[in-house]
Length: 75
Image (tube, rainbow, N blue to C red):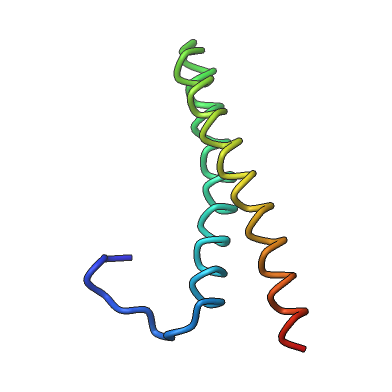
């Protein structure tokens, strides 16, 4: 998303959901990059992609927990 575009909703939960979705999608995308690097024999790049994947997985898990907590408190 372009930085000069405004969020369609001025809502912090919407923003959380958007970043959560992007983190989880990145996990899936980076898996393909890891495979490509391994297929080309570039273990250094594969390790770097694995670190990126791990960071996105952590962010995704933290985001899911945070969203769950926020949605429960709104009920």
